[in-house]
Image (cartoon, rainbow, N blue to C red; front, side):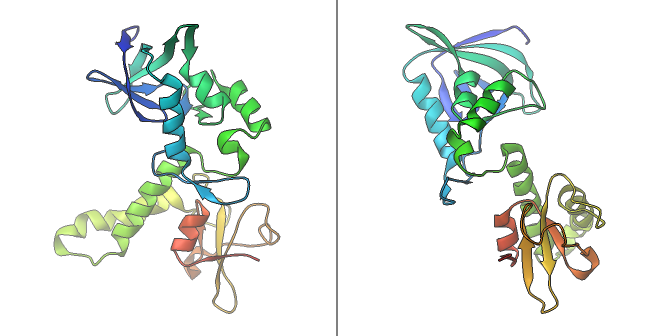
Length: 238
């Protein structure tokens, strides 16, 4: 219920989710990397940014209680709430801490509260801004796409016929453009097949990115991230 106050000692589920007693809380206004998500540091090496985000929230709370004001319920029944840690020096807003230190991004789709803090963290190369990363929302979308594509690739059993028949349409609408005009849903990496049959992907800003056209009927495709491209058998452009 909007306006409800939930207060107590929390359990940290991940970088933007808490549980107090039997109440599940989705922290309002920001989005943290998922537990299994990897980001790249300043040297281009992968690291577990999702786990790091959760650990940062856990350390920030410490042994202090948390006070949350419920705004609404999300589709999973969680209490979407603005929460503060109740310290000896006064309440500290969790979202401000997470976003300003680069452990999460402002969830612009649902609010503008933390946009300025995200911009400052970006400029200072804090946390995930030290290198490169997918927004958590895009990462979750990619996991859904990968699951759908994996289902498409399995042997079609009679009992799966109805559900699998819909998969090409679903995957197409969520991951790939149906023309050369541009990618769908922010999947901007171009998976090209050259005249030698080599599968090469091009990232935005790359030397050949702008001149590369994607021909879907010839097996070329769009990717949402480099991991997805590599798993599908493409290599990076040199």
